[in-house]
Length: 182
View 1 (tube, rainbow, N blue to C red):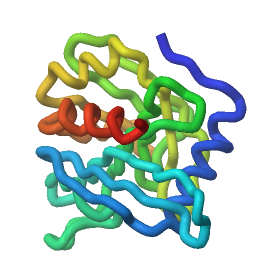
View 2: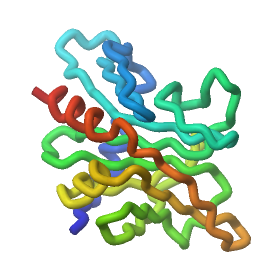
View 3: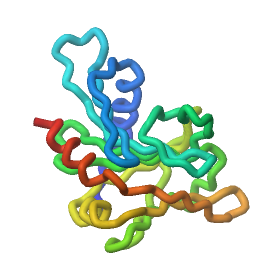
View 4: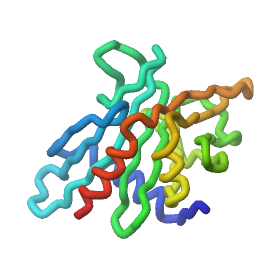
């Protein structure tokens, strides 16, 4: 079962904007997933915000590296992030797909052991098109057990573009993300 609220898109956008103006405090890699924590600059009592992320590049690589690409020079096709929002006990899966996708078709996430999830795109900006879903425990458990998920979006000709999402390192990454809340 998936949950969402009307205020969640606003909170997500604030979370994204905050990270742009934040100082990195911690960075690790878990398999194909990166883990990064940051604090808002200039705010002494600011809470640390942590995210698990993976970037899929045009040259078919996965990188737990910078959100804009990697040292190999590949162009970002998909950015997947998992993080917690203030007051929410379950993590949120935030997907940034490229501009130019067919918005009414939604973005789907398929992982063995769980029903396919269709996620509506909330908005597009210069960084891409954003879609999110609150991850309930069965969805998280399917990510832990599987080796790969498939994220599909549609181009303007209604052709599905499926990007593999490696789940190597997800279990350790999500455990570290949960522990970072304490």
